[in-house]
Image 1 (cartoon, rainbow, N blue to C red):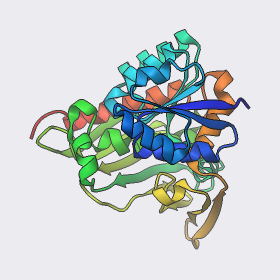
Image 2 (image 1 turned 135 degrees about the vertical axis):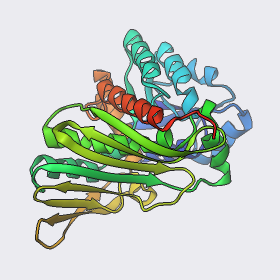
Image 3 (image 1 turned 60 degrees about the vertical axis):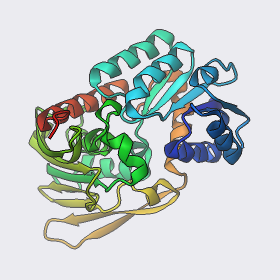
Image 4 (image 1 turned 180 degrees about the vertical axis):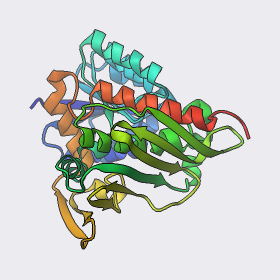
Length: 338
């Protein structure tokens, strides 16, 4: 593996999680952090013992000692800075969603291709052994023919998050912020069930409660996936619900009460998958993660940087998920003021 010197574009909460992950990783080091406020960048650098702090993203991208950039700005700025990083010759790991729309993602991918750099959307949960074990169980036929999936990711945002999540110009709303996990996971189940590398729904419908600004505060979608698998997906930024995943098949069901995106599972430790055969007793399958998901993510980039794409999260995978999100947002009337 290549050792990567990381630069962080933005110094928020998620950047702090990733910085801790790089410190834990085997093939990454923290080289610089940039924020719009130079004092904030310096405070972040002190906290994580990062040697350089910049008061602008442009300064960090001009630093020849940085190999790869982690973009964790608000959603609407991902496109601009992922393209700028690629044009600066830096490898790019960009927080989910890669961009606001699939069309924007195509431009980012074109920039990565033109500048011959690595690019990956940072869906860290896809790299967790719990997620990989779920896919293995599905593909092995552990619950027979998969027929339905239910998955939910919903929370009531705190005041710090509310401004960003309520602003449509920043890509606010639950569908883009956390519903993207639900579409990604439902599609992953269908991929494992059908043996296809990338799948998209043939039908997408949905409803949502829209805020006065037109963003979805809580939403539900229904997908018809290959194999005639029906997926019910729910998300929210102003409603606390019970997060989790249930997969129903002809021979039983799988329940994951704590998906790998839940905060405790981001750290090393043991998680559980509950497999219940039809007419049988539940079996608890324990899955151990020896690394945090963010450390795993940094090492995954290092392992595949020369390939320019990561096998777990190819560019085709990113585009398929964003096209699904485009259709879900259209179905609920995103942007239409209430």
